[in-house]
Image (cartoon, rainbow, N blue to C red; front, side, top):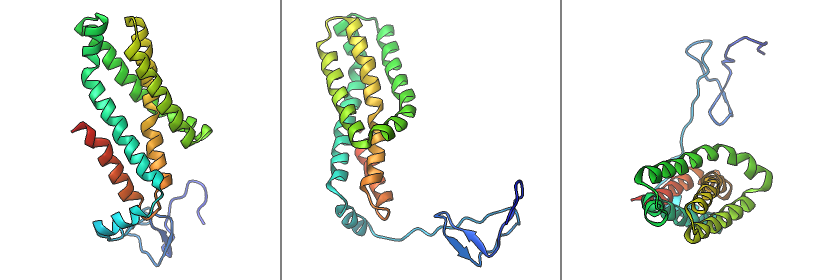
Length: 195
């Protein structure tokens, strides 16, 4: 048993990455804990078969991810043009607000986890997608640059909530055995609209 401040290895019970005791493991150095993990070997066919056994919510998450990012990737290409053409901003102003939008999305992602934990993943996704739809509608109907910017910045907050909550939903909808492959497919669904 180690006391406060001591570093050492119990050579009889080193732990693997998953926290299970590995009896008889030897360390090279007394202050080193050897972390060992053997990944299961499965084929793509086996991974897909097991993923098909996951709840249908996982496939709805993939669809929501694809549609959300298809909209955002196309939106980011046209955002400065919309601000300059429809609302009379200069190219510099439109670029500033497009960069501000991206910055707000990036910063807000850090604060979403606690909110999703407080109200639940399902409710957070419904709130996020509803607010995203309303703010996009508000942007399309905005009569002035000021209302367009208010809708744009509110859309940034709404959009920032979707990605981390979708990832949490993937974790909850997949089984421990399929989780790594489930996230691989989630990233594929996320990246595909940007190609």
